[in-house]
Length: 150
Image (cartoon, rainbow, N blue to C red):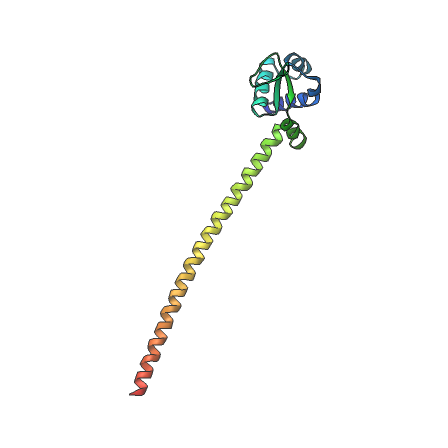
């Protein structure tokens, strides 16, 4: 079982059993046979708490600190995350997909900027050439006019 599988397993278990006010002992018992040891469970609980997906209740107080004696409940953000994203694997996949999409968009913008620079330069040189050609024609017409009058 990968680390992400372990996080997802603990989080899903908490989501399913949140209404039972699970403490560390209940969580450990509920996850027996899942190849997740108590140290990993504690680390995962700390991670989920840092992500604000769960909170720790001791008596009537929501604790800002981690404790072996509190009950771990899914927060509103945790419920929303579970019902919309579901797993950390999916969250990471979405983040990677978004990063890949943004990287592609950045490359497209760079290519477009290069093309714009190239076409702007061509337009500038074309305009200069037209201006020089127009001045040349003007000079020829002035010379013709002066020559015709004499």
